[in-house]
Image 1 (cartoon, rainbow, N blue to C red):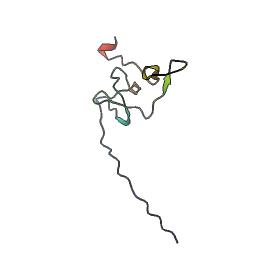
Image 2: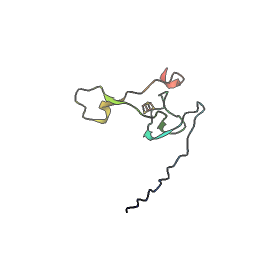
Image 3: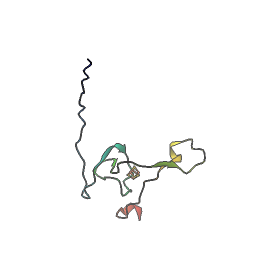
Image 4: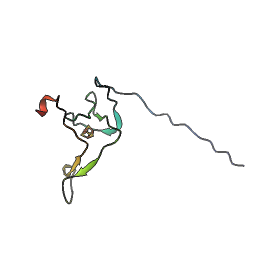
Length: 80
Ligand code: SF4
């Protein structure tokens, strides 16, 4: 008879919340603070997942890629 041991993994769950009550997704690091989905208090996105795409037919560099989940933050003074 085989007995399998199931180990539990402790996950760091400290949350960063903003005044808008956004929670940082530590799997999506981002520095685009002009985006409405950015948590602002740290360099993370608040979404559960994002869509990354390209505006090029043959992307060959970082700047060829885009976060297609970006939404301009209308409260951002730098974005007006
Ligand atoms: S949606 Fe994209 S650009 Fe906006 S905060 Fe998230 S990762 Fe950054």
